Length: 347
Ligand SMILES: [Fe+2]
Image (cartoon, rainbow, N blue to C red; front, top):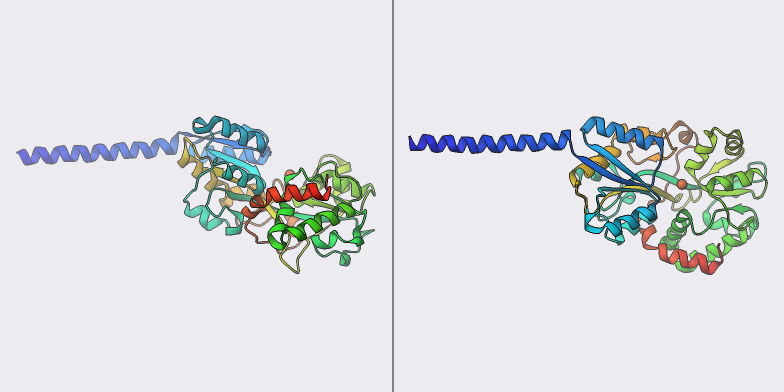
């Protein structure tokens, strides 16, 4: 009898445990939330967040601000930060968040298997979600494409007063220069920056789109821009922008050598994430085939998931060789890049 009671008690404990476990699993699957601090403000992102909510029952709370503000906010909030996921553009910024100890190392087989190693942090603190290339957009009536070759060549006399590129305050240019530092060293990087200043058709102003518009207006012959801006111009509701997009041709630099400079927008799990498991699930969802299809067809960025084809427009530009430098190096060389720009007089 004693034995039977003991067995019953054990069973009760076991079933109790089982029920409790089932309940916890059910609870995390059907409820819970994930707090996302994001710099991206695309309709497609909203659509994806909704899909994630429907699929998992995990509510996505979004805080939108620019990347530096979000990083600052996380720093001030410290241990009590509600942030679970940080999403931002440019590996330089993601590395900045990592260096400020705002992210944590994530162990996820899905992320490991989906994202190529150069597109994520070596310590798995951030992961690329979408790729963009920094390319040449040129006026075909004034530039013979056989004259184009490398970023380095753009800094030579041949292009004096012909190139349009935005300010050095912009992280895209800082990361491009950081890639040159990583590949060729500081001296070569400085020489490049100085040469580029000579090649500029005007003092830097405006964003990437404005550089393309300036080419069309005849202010210069070449603009250096991220790929998705061309896609956005071509698909703009403003006919002037469509015309600007149609007036330039695309060239991928450094195809014979290291490949074209690329960058990512990416995500990391916050160091003090209150909903860490949900945060991992969320990032895993964003690199899934279904989510990457949405990214690929919304902002003209290249998917990081190789099972997904880029948008038709990007496919029409053909495949290109990308620089496989680990993107964390862009963050590591950011400070030197800013200094070199300053020394070179790149405004
Ligand atoms: Fe951008």
